Image 1 (cartoon, rainbow, N blue to C red):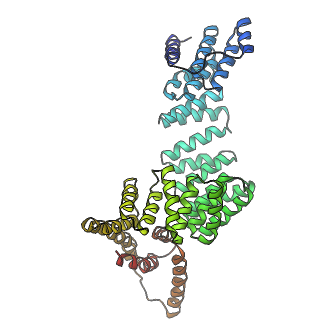
Image 2 (image 1 turned 135 degrees about the vertical axis):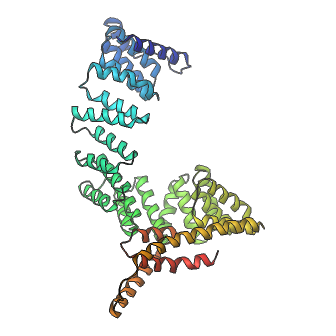
Image 3 (image 1 turned 90 degrees about the vertical axis):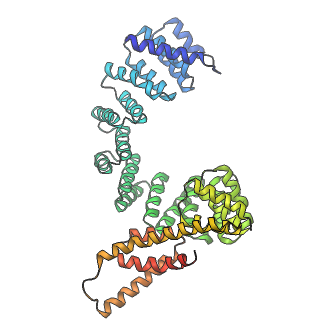
Length: 450
């Protein structure tokens, strides 16, 4: 056995044993009797595995080391030591025993997969991909290896390579989700929707696939499609809390308050301490003008998740309407500290400051918000200058264009927030001039109110 590795394992076991433990290293009597009658590497591997399953990692390492004394060249025991170190939160220390296991038995799949995971956790992605590739040479259909390579490439921003790798992989839900994620990160949302739709036709009850497709529909601003899909999943799985949560979120995002309110109240009654249900009920109650109830629900939501700035912003709105500008100011300031960048947060913050008599500070925030809106308006305008018409349209074509603009404006008007409208306009296949007309028509009254 490698003397350096043995010293390392003994030192680590001594350090772990020196720390206080609530468990004594006592294995089941059956295993201990076997170890006393016929001690060998396999029985100590079983004892160590028993301790590892119960998260008694120091005891597990001690058992594996006893096995190594009996069989110094055991690739299995080196793998189990690496697994124990990785599971106990020491991926850096797991590298050496895992490499030793691979050196002794290079054609075994699991050590390659575990070593790759440890390297990936240590941000050594190139090395990790080499180990996953080695695993694929052993098993060309290894889901774990394809999944690891794809996620590593996506983390590096190499979406094209991830898509190429996943296309060669076997049909599997995990790999389908990876492929959809790569398409989505690469702004190929139509491809992502196509892949997920095909997968859902084969397994329509899959919540993971449904959730991913709903996310894609929301990014495409296809809210009705997202609502229908989430509603179907909620009906299929009435006991699945995540499915009900997804349905409620999409209803609120779509602005369908009439349908969302009874669903939100029912879910909150069944789960009164759930952050999402408290938060979403608070949003709906704010929209309904029931500010005292909204304040209660949003205060509870903020206690459960104090770092979610949207909850603090909505609580600030409720407090502002309840004539508590000091409380509203505190919530808006906290939301801005947590990373809120939406202009409406600054606008409401400025309103709270004015109510407190801090007009200079309020004026600065209003100027920031006004400039942000103008920058967003100028982006499509600058693009439109590059697309000046080269000839006059006929009267009939102008009328058809006007009717199209009117229909699009009605759809735009149904969207609740400026952010949703802008995202929809930026994803539409339309001329920049058409987008400018729609955007300016909606944003001008907002600017004038600042």
